[in-house]
Length: 72
Image (cartoon, rainbow, N blue to C red; front, top):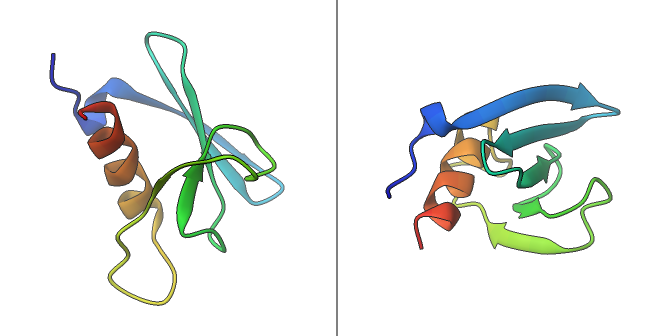
């Protein structure tokens, strides 16, 4: 099964950290100062890196990185 952006459920932002869930229950976190997606809200366990087009990644680039990671 291939994942798409539509398969992510955006849960909002808390203290600058954005959270997405999948229907299977996986959670992914991102803060605008991080160039990675994390497995937990602290950002210490990087799951995948974001390919940013500028110095800082965007929320859309973070979501794309999650989908790319899920499709590996």
